Length: 115
Length: 112
Image (cartoon, rainbow over all chains, first blue to last red; front, side, top):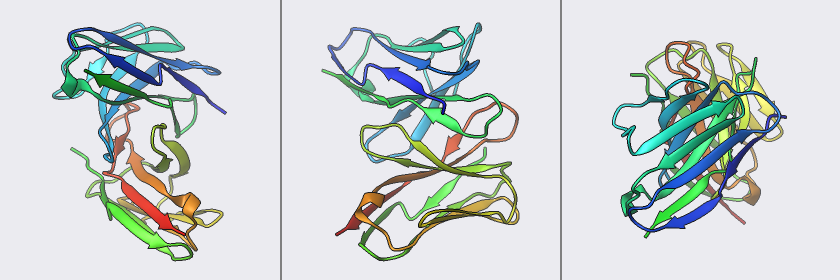
């Protein structure tokens, strides 16, 4: 089945630094990937749609300059949290839709802690 | 804006009991999906329902899509501690964007 690999699984960084999270589709091509944010015991909130070869589409209220998304190839999308602050601490999850399927495959998530 | 209202948000039951989780919307969805998520992991797809009135079974889990395709339910028979987790319904909002929106989630705890 479709597999999405997300890396790193956990990261701790200092306030003011930037952190990059990678999302790879391992056995299929994903022209579109999605980035979500999840708070403890809460649901997933869609942040942005990552489009291969073009700019990402951000949901209302999501700062595009803080959350930089790059989808440079059909198998890789990256989310960079710039100038991170403690309030950016969260669980970030990516997903991709396999060609011809209704279902979405999710990465295993990245726990970001900003200290 | 299409929303998915999921209930209950928290459920704590004893092993062997039955339970139902509901996912409701005022809008029609072309399909709805149910996911299960464990702490520190991404959601895992359980089922996709597409046709109004459709019923799908996955061992002790029964999923139903409402006739009008505005609601769905997940019923678990004889719950086991291994069923503990966060259950999420999700569906594509209007338009062919490929996006998914999620319900608030139901945290299920099954006690031995």
